Figure 1 (cartoon, helix red, strand yellow):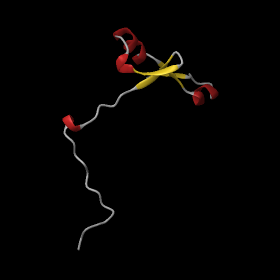
Figure 2: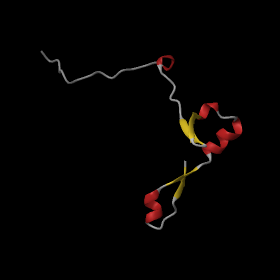
Figure 3: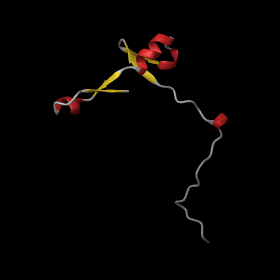
Figure 4: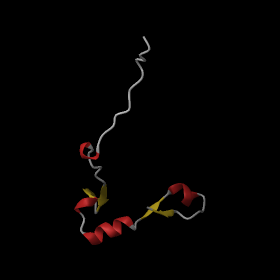
Length: 66
């Protein structure tokens, strides 16, 4: 018998079977989905600069684009 018990075949899904990934972010002390933002707030979300502590500690720019 050639069957491998540790082998799992790849699962293939068509787009209609997939679940959309919902992105949440912290706003004013609570979390909410980005999809619920108005068009202006969604634009602000995509323009955010993300802080990296390692870069700040090394004297490099501490922010990078998202």
